[in-house]
Image (tube, rainbow, N blue to C red):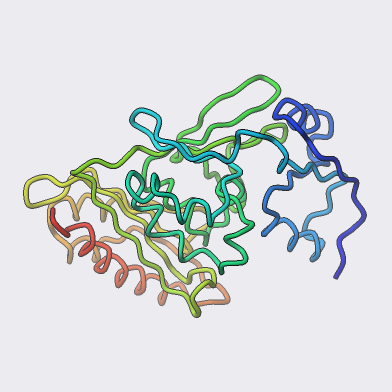
Length: 279
C-alpha cells in the first residue's frame, strides 16, 4: 500500500520543530528514523497532514556521561548507541539490549528517542529505560520538562507526551561497581519483536541483591514492572519470584497468555542468574 498524501517540512532547529507541532497539533507527525512511522503510513494506520523531518536538528544525536547520568540524544541511531564506549561502560543494560533490536539496516536508521516515544510494548528500549529508572527529556511550546520512565508509558502506544511536544533525550543513571544488569528475550527469529522479554537492574548487597527492578516487555500494553517478584528476588528467593510473577498478559498472535506467563518465568531465572554474577 501507499501512504495517504501528506505535506513535508524539514525543521532546522528545535524551536522550529516545536513551533510546527504547536501549529499543526494532531495533524503532524515527527520523522526521525522512520522505521515505525513509514510502516504505519504505508498501512494507513497513520495519516498525518504534515511530516516534520527533525533529522537536520543539530545537537540531538549526542551520547555523553553527564554527572551521575548517561544522556542519549533522541536522534542517536541504534547503531551509534550499540557501538558507543560510553554506553558499554556506563549503561551496560542498554548495551546488552541493542543487538536484539531489529536487524542492522533497522539499527542504522532507527533512533533511540523514536523508539522510546513510539512506546511499542514489545520493544526493548522502553523496558530498558523503565528498568533503569531513567527519565525522558521533553521540549514543547511551554519549555522543557522531564518525566520519569515510571510515569511516561501510559498505555498502548500512549505516553506522557502532549501533542505539541517531542522527546529530546533520555537519561539513565550511570552504572557503578555495584550495578548489576540482566537482559533476555524470546523471539521466533532474532530481530523479530519478542514474544516475551525482560530487562532488569539491581545493586549488589553483600552476597545478595537490592533495589531490584524487573521490566517485562511483550506482556502488556506497556513495559510492565513485576514488583512482587522484585521483592522476592531481593530476598534471594528465585523460586518465590517465579511463583509470584505479577503479570497478566493477553493472548496475541504470537502466543497464549499462559505460554507468555510460563516464558516470563523462564526468562526470570535466566536474568536472575545474570544479576547474581559477581554479586
